[in-house]
Image 1 (cartoon, rainbow, N blue to C red):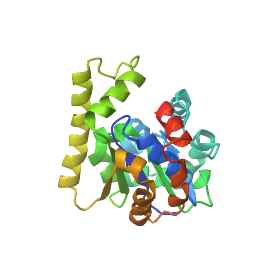
Image 2 (image 1 turned 120 degrees about the horizontal axis):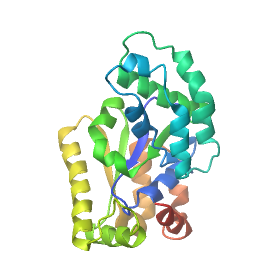
Image 3 (image 1 turned 90 degrees about the vertical axis):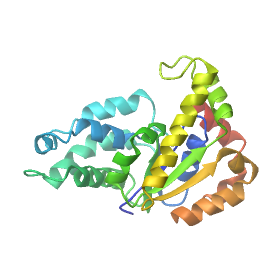
Image 4 (image 1 turned 180 degrees about the horizontal axis):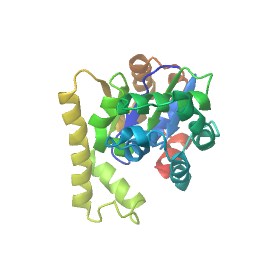
Length: 247
């Protein structure tokens, strides 16, 4: 399995879940949608006193958090792998004394995904909130392939306001919702300017719906993944509707 992941990232309702579901169904995939392990491991393994925390990784707590909102994948057993095999993986890595935190987290992530789908050739995750921690993610995986999703800000904001009106993190006023989408897009644009060393691309939601074959072929070329183009007929109908409901 590749050492570096493919990461699908973007504001809510910009097609990130749809794109993530396509990667999850691609050939040789160990891809999750809302896997969130990058977020949780960075939070549960603080840089300060890392050597001690690396011997006490709370994968049981992380598993509980992952079950709170189901991780999407056509392959079952991801959370069980994190909880049941994660401890053995940590023990096998045997951190002793001060260790490079980022290298430890990156290798732990790779091994967990490999244990989950040992026959897979690539791995990765889609999670919207990685938008707010792009530098941290890039420090873990400088060779990652970043697939950013984008949609007209007013369309994304209207859709998010309708879908997530009961969520505390969703602005109630439309103008505020638009401002949030544009702010998140700004984080992505700033990251791409500041980190030309990172491999990035942008998928426009409207283009994906209008020209799925061309967009998915370009994604195959960018990521080296096969099995996206063959799913083109799933874009814009059942899969899109399911993905947008689950976002």
